[in-house]
Length: 158
Image (cartoon, rainbow, N blue to C red; front, top):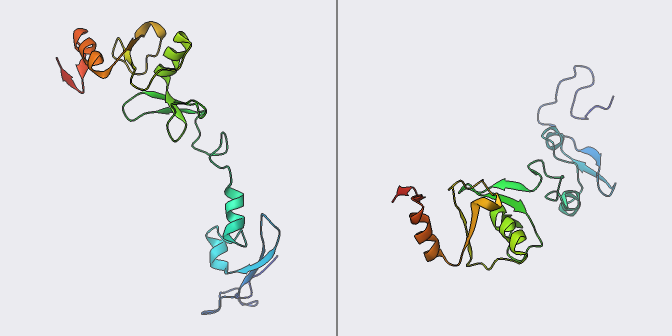
């Protein structure tokens, strides 16, 4: 058993005011370094430098490495389903595209222009069946069509 130099060998108590450095081995480069026992107790003191810590975290956001990864599917705050498509020309900075736009693009066999709107006929934003989607040329045309179907726009009924 390894003991810390700041613990009394006889009583097993911590010596007040004494904090002895602890020898550790870097998990990335294997270099020996010294750190305080209190850093090890809180889960730190695993790396000899910020560079090694950065190397250990490289790629943590990639598929499967992040515990919050949900197979590339997210729900947008407005209720739309987002899919991870980092190579899509109109993806967000995080690499996501709305699923209903991808479904319409697959039907048309081309990318949608940013001003083209995909309308959910039944008003359910997660219902991305092709028979429930309609392509609209502009936002103004979308508003006209939306009210024509008697739906709600931004929470208000027409």
